[in-house]
Length: 609
Image 1 (cartoon, rainbow, N blue to C red):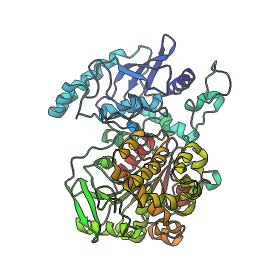
Image 2 (image 1 turned 30 degrees about the horizontal axis):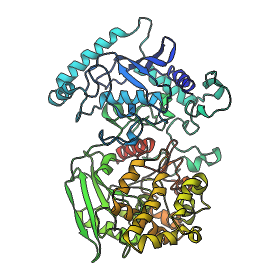
Image 3 (image 1 turned 120 degrees about the vertical axis):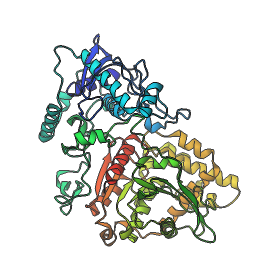
Image 4 (image 1 turned 60 degrees about the vertical axis):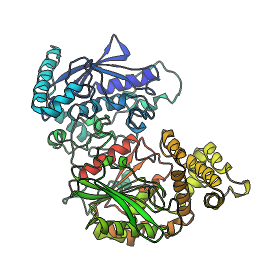
């Protein structure tokens, strides 16, 4: 399988102007590479940086190795040419490194993703924990000296350009990409797949070709609706297109081959000034230093706000004190916030407000169901807004249950919301609840063993409708009984949250009984009551009419098992003024690479509104 995948990727990359590749001794597992920097705004512009790339026999399940042969003075490149970059680290969590699974290698990545990540890394170094300490010190203390050293490295690298190799120019690369985009070139299977000695109909080609959700047209990586649906489902409505559309992205350029990927560079001044002219949707990468997101200092303000004689809610503010206020609404119900949630927002622009909803996180009392309804939470948001002196939210940001609250709050207070960034859409219709939690739902059919474990915790006569039985176990009896029920509930819920289950999330919840109870108790509490909403309330035309003027982006994983993709589809069809992005290699979790990248990109874009 590895050989066939690598042959496909090698052939695809041979068409790209920004990389020169060849096999080392005709070994498909050993590549000689030269990365060519075409961005004239880059410190590394014009460089021809030679490297070797090696692949393990079980690729793509283990990451490739990468090492620069050309000396490069850079904080994240060791003196011997090795890189400090998360995408090259083995899958899974590593508490000692501080990296999450979403930042590390996954089988969904491709060689192209790695190379794009490295190009992005060059001009966006992470200096807090440098691999080359000297480079990190020089960059911080004497940026002009750092530039001179880099300029010397670039000139030295040109000595390695082969005599018969014609260096591509910026203009030629742009023309090539635009021509491909205009022609909407489609690579047929018989042309794309390299002949292989692998026999049979194995599924091992799933990583090797052009994904069906990737070829999304010349402007962006939005949905792939049928022709008859294109006008309604393109993310552009007749009312919006042709005017000063707040949804038009601040685009950057690398090459047309990257257009068809759902990976996009985080906006960076040196890229946007050059790449922004093509009208091509930005490609994205996932280096540890740039794609993991923004790093914030500690909260400049935090505290507890009494919202009723029973409840206090915890809040915290990060980023720029006089910046554009964005409210982060966590999921669940029963989730919580932490400093890590600020990663999507540029601290030089945004004033990030985090709120632990009633009964969740640091709010008190923990897992309390009394005086805890959707209306109470919406009221708390207003109390908090007034308390911290926000006249209008620049943006509401919410995933899953957070998207529910964002939509409801905007519909209740359309004059107080400047924009919406929502992911993993959940509108609490009965079909959405049945999808995950009932034996007739999709999840029970796709993960029958997990669902059986979930209902086995219940008495046999109560398994047909798990809500009442779990609600009783979660809210009555001894704490030990309630914690056991919470763990069974969460085990099922968390296990289907991403394509590659994040066991660390579950272990963290198991280690904190209060968090486990809050998550399970409040989810069950809200779900058994339908969140006190009318069926289809959020999608009603009269309610959507109130927010049609608000710039909004919908992001949804194509393989979301927690919140059915149809919900995002239904919302966008009812609200064509919104914009929708399908993430082809993601499930429900916002931390999955494709979803995380797109969220950061949209937050960067909306910072300009």
